[in-house]
Image (cartoon, rainbow, N blue to C red; front, side, top):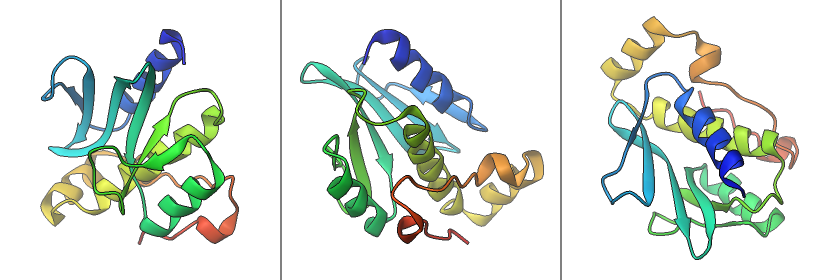
Length: 144
């Protein structure tokens, strides 16, 4: 993925409500958080960009089975996180859907007071965007 596309992914991550970018592991790993909870890591590793995203365990495995560029989460809980190689083999709209899903899962897992704070400030569509997966309805898990 060229740096222009990496900037587009970063911009998409930063467009999420209350998203913050921090560098706790050094300048090579951008960590994206909502209310102090991690929802993505963008890192240059082994000659290419990759994006770590939270995922429902069943969907995580389905994505790994379908896309060669989706791997168990590097340095993450492999049941709940995927590493997505940004090698242009996955459509941008599917990458956005994966980001949306990760963000939504993290927001849903926030303490009730933090989640309500967000819900009072942002429309539900922004916080809980659900775009159907390219894999079909078998992997579209309700989050409520």
